[in-house]
Length: 489
Image 1 (cartoon, rainbow, N blue to C red):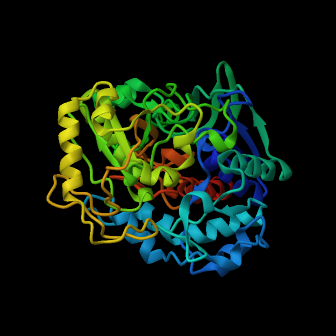
Image 2 (image 1 turned 120 degrees about the horizontal axis):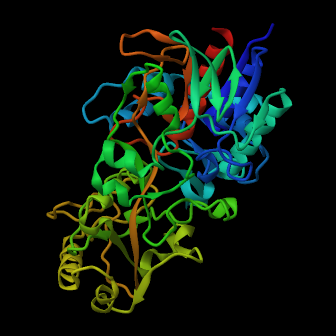
Image 3 (image 1 turned 30 degrees about the horizontal axis):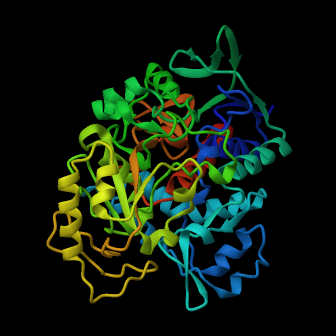
């Protein structure tokens, strides 16, 4: 008889686990805490970008929904090797070597993308956010090139369609409230008073980012103020259940993906917005200006690297500032380069013709100190180096603490705009230890029979931050592995 596998959750990792298990002939039931409209975990809230290793355009074309796109002949995708992917992850490891989990992510990222494409999960180049036009060509930067068609909603829809084509079943409004144990083995789940027995259970229910108490416990008091970029349903349920079954904690529980967000957004992400607008509360063009805290001081190197190497950390940096907010300041030279989220109908900002007038409008900020900071920044800008947003241009503001290493232009041409921001948490890094089959491990180093995990619940994948687009890829990589492990184990 085919094995019966229960998957807890319906996000990207859960759906990839279901697809893999169905491939092996298993019967699969997905249990979703939310109703159908809010299903999909954090996946629907994302922009759908996925980072993976590739050698060149020939590796990308087979993954595209429209391989005849007229822009492709005039596009420079470059390459993104496994070595470069590993180096990028090391840059966020705070001195740690690549973990076993990171090595799996790097080495299998390309194969996992090809596997998704084989199930009609297709992608499109991220022309609007990851390329600049240069000498008549679209030049991609930062190693991130493709996103799911129709962003995170499209990724969810395509993966769910694959699950349903293959015979998988989804039950909504079915929050798993506990695991059924037979000795040390997991043999099913509880949904309220209902018991559902299974040969294997895959936990893919997300991290604890939507649980303020757990955030404070593991990450500190500043994190109570964090906006939750995604679903309100990722409240750490799978982590709690796995711990009760004997699982070990693993990874950096104080770490998370945290992005600068509009200070006045709602407490949680909004699925009421059209897919293309769900990312619009992000504010990640800070590299084109400066960020000032309540004391009127800069606190990060806004131009340390391409924004997809810094944005997942700078939300946390904002939450460390007085009042857990900051202002992003730009002059009119860069208005046309700001991402569309800055022109979103619900974007909050102030505008003035002079810097003196602008700082007076920046609520909660020491205006005199802010003005002094802006003048000092302008005086430190290197005017001899040309500005080039397609490269690490070396156009810096030196002699400051912190410096601005690239893309430093004087903030001198009015009108000026300032956008209030805070930290928005996307997902947490602490989770569970899993083995090569995706089985959840105990403190003693043995797998818990019948219990598997993937997605945000896998610890050890990210530490001090991550290069953008790695999260969805990680979910797919470890979801696929858990699905095969649960169905074949």
